[in-house]
Length: 94
Image (cartoon, rainbow, N blue to C red; front, side, top):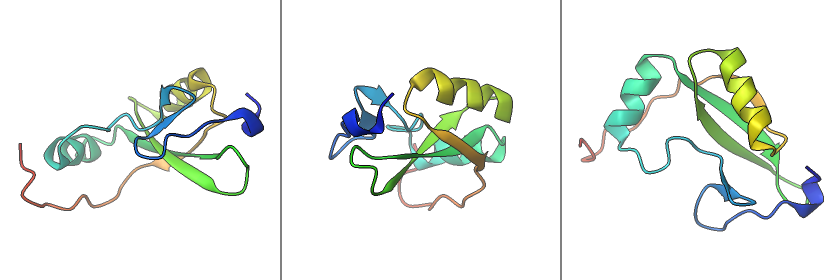
C-alpha cells in the first residue's frame, strides 16, 4: 500500500477502513488479561502524509503470527515487540 493514499480516521483506530488496534472497544480489565498472557503486540506505521508514526495493537499467539496479521492488514505495519505496558486500573473493571 502506498503510504500517500492512507486515510486515517480522526477518532477511531481505523486506516483505510482497517482496524489497527485489536483491543479497540475492550475494557481495561480485558486488555490487562491479554497483556498478562503476552498475546499483545505493538505495531507502528506512517500516516497518509508519511510525516508521523501511528501505533497499533495485534492480538496473536506469537510474534510470527503478529507479523502475519500485520502483513495481512496491508498498512505497512512493523511489529515492534510484545506489549508489556501497564494498563490503568480505572473504574473500567467490566
